[in-house]
Length: 145
Length: 145
Length: 117
Length: 117
Ligand SMILES: Nc1ncnc2c1ncn2[C@@H]1O[C@H](COP(=O)(O)OP(=O)(O)O)[C@@H](O)[C@H]1O
Ligand SMILES: Nc1ncnc2c1ncn2[C@@H]1O[C@H](COP(=O)(O)OP(=O)(O)O)[C@@H](O)[C@H]1O
Image (cartoon, rainbow over all chains, first blue to last red; front, side, top):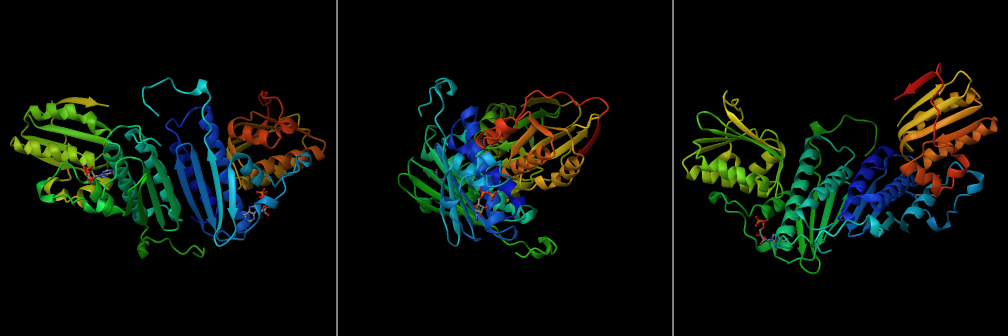
């Protein structure tokens, strides 16, 4: 996967498909929100690697690893561009209505993040699917969990 | 992901989407065959875990991990069912036109396989995208590889 | 997976399978294949031109049909194999044994037809 | 992403954005947004009822439109936000500042319209 924004769609489609692997019922408001948040966060992270890590050069590689277990998805993104320290990026100054600087805030709001700088830089985003509120759960179907 | 055959489709769709991540040109006969072989092999492996590993019980978990790097895809499948030794399964006896026993042969023909029995059993299937024959490659586009 | 079985006036049968024939969908075929074999056709044409994907369970069902029809003295011809199913049949060396001409004669007029979806 | 800009006879503008507004597609909007702002409209309605996805670059473009229009003395109202875009606007606390009534008056008759796909 090359780090151009054209390739982001393909990544997001794979991530979206993988979100269906974390549950036996990929539907309902809880899962819909889970998928929306995962896809949004990965999209922001992809943008950042292309625009900051590779400074828009468009020839850098981004390796994507997607791991789905029951109730949890983990996406590791590896790039060979410049590194940064996500813990020192300040949150947006909401009152000044900034036009940029929202990306990392969205990522951190929606997913758990870990970052190891190096060659490659490894950004790992993960998220646990919250258990469904009782009124969303399907009626008993006789299949033991 | 639960180990029922109903869930195989969802897995295969995620794998198919991830096949687009291994190249900057997910198209053409070489890539089409790559994807066809990967999806076929993973489908057979999923069937086997459900039908043999979990003996059709339908309540076992299968964890799927998909890793795409440039030119290579790796799919790890973890299950908590019974173990086996893929190296001792004999190849099909082609002359007798058997009605079963083709699955592992298809898997091994299409992908590299490694298997570690345990809890979980880990079956790892991987495959390198062959480089395109020269006449399939796109005309020079000015983008360095 | 959807399929259509048509019986011609001369007693030959035509089975057309569309979509994905796999470990799940193969069971939908079973009853109708039993009935088809019970009619002891002299010839079965299996049209796979619209089969998109097959797995080893689907191959198993087709091999079983082939062997049972032959054991009854009938002939089976598979037509139209392409894409993934063709690759699987080639890999399993079934293409030379089981696969007939790629060009399918249209079903004769006056044939009766049952269609399942 | 596709968008439509309509100018009403009273000089107010209506911008409707459909699909996905992201770091790639946002650049398609830029020239037309410049032209729209150059017309110094007293009111801009941004209809987002058919916006399916937005990312931070898309949000940035909308915030920029909002701030520049306001600096010119105009008003901007965002309508129809839903699903992922609504979740993003809420998260970024933009929903209370920038978002107006959810019910959109139809564009006045006699408005001129330019559509981009
Ligand atoms: N993958 C990355 N590689 C290098 N720098 C990054 C990366 N991601 C983010 N950054 C740095 O963090 C800053 C904040 O990023 P973000 O919150 O996404 O906002 P924006 O992209 O709008 O600047 C960026 O301006 C950049 O300096
Ligand atoms: N995941 C698995 N767990 C346990 N046993 C397996 C598994 N996969 C394959 N096997 C064993 O290997 C044999 C051969 O498998 P395969 O070639 O797929 O043919 P078939 O499934 O038609 O028997 C199976 O019959 C089974 O005994």
